[in-house]
Length: 580
Image (cartoon, rainbow, N blue to C red; front, top):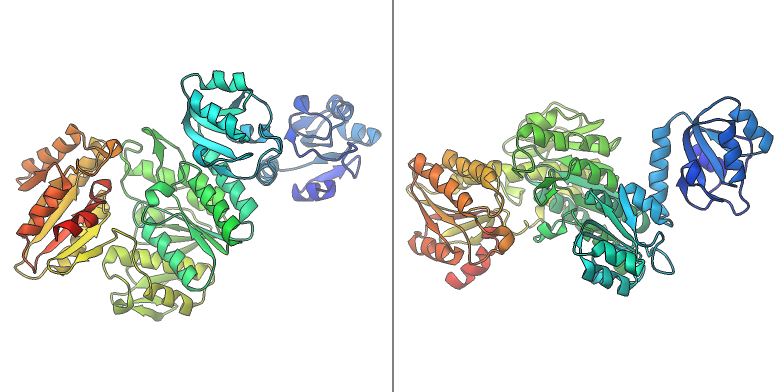
């Protein structure tokens, strides 16, 4: 990096010397003056002549300041020392962050970014430094960086033996710190593991996919379908594209380095990406603790050209406790998208309140706006022209049409040809458990609906398909280990949706869930109490297979069976293969 290029990037004025001062140039380290060594660059809000003399004597590469005081400029000129005077310290911080993410040569840059504490070794452990790859401990090789929510002494020893560059954790257990110090292995401890995963994501994209066009999708409902549909349209158009959304998307979240690993592995194996389509949870936490501003943090790390916000509704109760809390978690996403295009659901009042620089609107009603796509009841309209009729859509329930609109809006914003978009939508096949048809007689539909808005929308759409004088057999898996609050809201959504002709079945799904999704007594009781209070009849089963067997045996061929819920309903399709 040339010093004049640095001054230009910072919109600063260079005085004193037009080259870096140290013989070997810039070391790659930005730091404070008192910590600087030969070749480093020091940054200070203000500097006086004494500070310039210190920088000169320490043989640092140059000094950057907002406020040169008391003859500092004259001192720099007298010593022939390079001083860059800037007007915007935030611009400097962004430059340093981006530079560090592209050139992670110094472990202290990583420590600073994740707001962590370094114990053990104060340099990367492997001889050749950092390999450029973030991953999991069991997958790590020499020079990789591992991010884990917790680590114990055994894990530190594994990392040491694998010769990885360093390990980042939020929770060092069982003498992990002592082991790091004993083995002289670098362990970074942070209270905000999300900062480590955001850094990993940003660094990985800059290193492995610097020329890709990136898209982020967030919101309470419809993220996965929207993300996967954008991915399919791009792939169908012949582009090399990667998404973190699939039928196993719960395991591809941004609370660990999985997505960073997916990107580096994909590029290494199959070459440069044209597009990245990244689903971001609107609310995220770990062990009951909210990762504040997670959606904006991760969106900023992706550096998107286009962002999508599907809706704002209640979910993740316990991490957030009101719709205002959810809004607060999403409201900074448009700022992270910046000058990019933000695709926004105009039908959602809270989404309309978001402050986006370049909005593109979607609606289930006619919109008289320039940058908009809408559904008029018969077709999807863009620029006053029908581009897809209802019969041409892969599914025609309202909440899925909203997802289609969001995906189309994103693809238009990416500059894709309308014919490419139409072809992609027509050939799309839904993700698992997105209003999926599992059987014809009786019709069995399976949906991931797991929060109040999703439950009400899915039941409403299913009732539209129900023949006269037939029954809807509604099978709901109670959410396990998610707390009383979200289950209270879910059962209230069921109560609101109930009508004549609906028979309700509940499952705790003890036969198919692990300890992370086990239905606690209080979660079960809140369902029972609310339904009893509202005089709604139901049948409860401890095991999902027993529940499905009973429902299938009772259903007439012209009835509909609707399966809803999260992890407790995931294995339903495979169980039905044995039942039907």
